[in-house]
Image 1 (cartoon, rainbow, N blue to C red):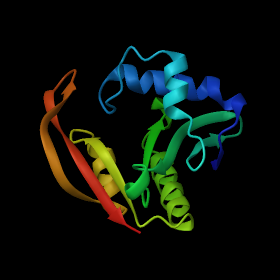
Image 2: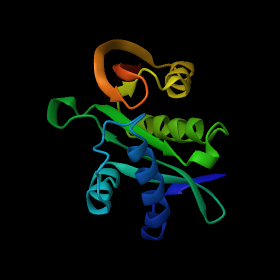
Image 3: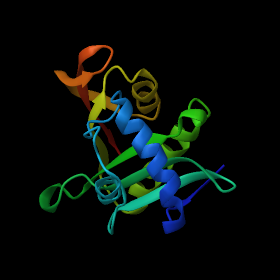
Length: 161
């Protein structure tokens, strides 16, 4: 597996991953009716942000986007989001993408990384982030409408760099 910068040729496979994850409504707060144009505008970061893909040959296994969490006085804290194709989950793709985002944020001089809305029922992601040094600063109870579990909390997670 290699992690590299997103290229235009990657978009069809990235769109498949984004569409699948968003429509499942289990891990992201995006509108499940998100169309391709809006997905592209949401997922593909422009400078100072970055979008990457994890690939095995020509196959995109996952993708990440990263950048400042907020503009202006909040721009010294980064954020990132990760999506992994269903067939590639549990194989280290998410971890590699998260480590790439953390390395990038350190190189760019960010003071920390903040995740604004981690679905508490997404146990694999929550556990991975904890292993990588993030802590849950707080949870908004019932803020995410999970299709099978009902309303579950959204964690705010943070890690200093």
